Structures are given as structure tokens and as C-alpha cells.
Length: 471
Image 1 (cartoon, rainbow, N blue to C red):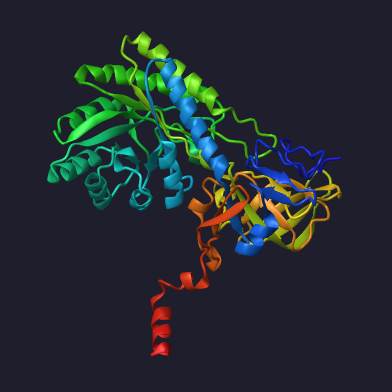
Image 2 (cartoon, rainbow, N blue to C red):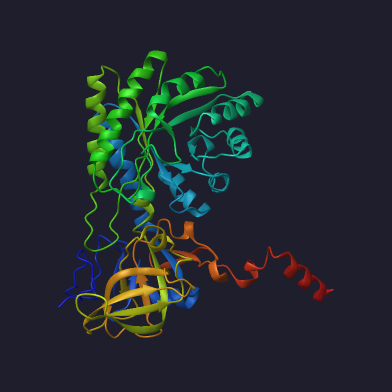
């Protein structure tokens, strides 16, 4: 019998040990001992060597998903007689190692700050394959991008036109730019993840686009590459993409009267499965539907199909990543304010909102498994919480764990490869966890974990005291 505290979407599992392949990295399975392994490496081996919390990435799964995204989007574009550029949206998860994988696989990369630009360049990818976003790019960031030879800078407001033109002119370069447009379409997602409606910080209104494109074209040091849209993140329904793309193609057709427009960027935001009950469409579904409406609208407006660009991030990085935790305290909490009293098990782990801020930011739901062993115990409705001094410090809000979960067990949380490390913090002076890539039975550290010494490395009084003690 399911717990009355469980939300309607959460079903009590028939097997609390089951590894759902659509949620977990594709090379995850249970050994005969009941312990989870990823790409041939047991979780106990990982945590013994690297500690907990620990971010783990199935490298081959990451590479496979990047390849799948590239192939689905480029193949769909070919069907309508055009080409597609596929950018990895690096804000999902970025390191120089990841840049190397993306470069090797032939994708481009999308960055949204000077720091992300620095990481992309340090990772060795050709600057011409980088796109720079940001609603408040500094003069330094713009200048750095122009100097490096970034292929496209996305203009997010009118003031950026002059700033980019000035930086390009000072270096006697012609800088490629796109114009981010709000189509007014609200994708079916969390309010903070919807990025194409008018009342938000990104982009410019459809009604203002023509005047700004004319202004871009008036500058000899700017090359207008095309329009850009991004309707939101973690989207399952294609209808928002379709409607937004219709509006963008109509504007694109109107702007062709003023000159050539080689491409159009249709963004990303393709959803993934976070929980066993999720039903995220395959990226091919989005690719075919979006390119079909592009072809239809171009025919309607009697224009050639432009080159297309896309920016998947979560789809590539999300499911290949997991987080491992060590269980600390456990509480059985009797909840009496519902229709009938019920018990929820609170399982505290050695991380929390500092390594996964999404549940606190977006009320995001995750899925967890007992990782260090299997269990024959009955499923118990559980809430996995962190060690921070916050009641909202929740890692997994609603899920079932074996009733016999106990201190020092290892828990694994699925689909944490995107927007977990990149949103991590040092709240309560916790150190950020390391990141390990696993492949063919081998584990490789790609980002070392922070130490307490790292936390004090910028504390000037502490550093001065240490210097005095040594002198």
C-alpha cells in the first residue's frame, strides 16, 4: 500500500532495487552482490578512492548522447535541404575535459560568461566554433570574445550593438552576431526556466527586432548571422517550439528584404527523464517536428531554408551523471496534518543544496537508489536531505528507499550531470565535491574536490596569519 504522503505521480516500486535504464547512465547495473557499478566500476571503489559526495560521469554515455544529438539534428536538417550547427550548452556542465570531448565529437560550444569562454578556449576548441551568450556581457568579455575570434556573439539588448561594434572596430575585425528575440511563447516548464515570454530579462521583443537588425546592419564591423530563440528548459512538449519557430520564421522572412541572413538559431531546452515515471521524448522527435515546421513556414513565405543552429545541454550531460552520498542520520517523522497520519523517512546525507541546488531553486524532483547493496526490505517513502542549516535543503523530495536503509549506506541520485556541479557552492563552508569520469572499468579524476585549505585561500586575514606563523 502506497504512503498517503506520496504525490500522485510517484508509484511505489515493485522492486526497490531496480535500475531504470532511461534514468540512469546506460552502463549502470547491479553486481551479483547487489552493489551498483557504473561503466564497470563499483560505487564502493569510487567512494573509497575519492570520498563522498562524489559526482560521477559515464563518459561513454555522455559521448553517445552528444553524438545522438548531433546526428538527430543534422539529419533532420538534411531532410529539409539545409545544414545544422549543434552547440553544446556548456552551462549544463563545463570543464576543459568536457570541452575536449565536445571538440573531438565535432560539436560546437555555447558559453554564457567570460569564465565559460575562458574554459572553452583553455579546452582547446577553435574559437570560431564558440557562441557567446549573456544578458549583461561586460566590455571586457566582449573585447575578449572579439580578440579570440568567437564565431557568434548573441546580442541580448540594444546597447550591446554599439559595444560589440566598437570592440570589433577597434580591432578592425568583422564580428558575427545573432539577435535574441522573445517570441512570447511560454513553454510548458517551471516559470524560472521559461525564457521566451516578454516579461523576463533575456532578449528583445518581436516588435523591436526589425529596427535593431537595421542598426546591426549599419555597422561595417558587424555581420548579422540571424535570429536566435530559446523557449525554455526541460521541455517535453513540442508545441511551444513549433509556435515559437513559426513566429521566428515569419520575422526572418520580413528581414530578408534588408539583406542576406545565413542562419537561424532555434535554441535548446529538450527535456530528459529524471524519474522512472517521466516520459521525455527522444531528441529525434523534437528534431523532426522543428525542422518540419521550418520547411513548412519557409515554403509558406516563399523563402529558402536557412542553416539551422541548436543548443542542447541537459540532454547531453544530464543522465550520464550521478551523485554518490554517504548516509548519516535517519529519522522516522510522523506527519499528522493530512487526511490520515503517515510516516515519512528522512535520510540525511553528507552533501545537499551546495552540490544540487535545483530542488531548492525549482522544486526539481530526483530519483535515488540504495547503491552499496540491494535489499529485500519493503519500500518506505523517503526524503533525502542534506546537512545544511536550511529546512529547504532537500536532495530528493519524494521517492521510495528500502525500509532498512541505515547509516554508512551509499545512496546514488540519478541525472545529476547537468546543472548540479555548475550550480554548486560553498554554503555553510562545505567543500565542492570532485568529479570523476568512468569508462571501461577505469575511473579518472577530471575535477579535484576542494579542501578546507581551498576555502581559506582567498581569506586575507587567514593567509596573513599563516604567513606570520611561518616567518
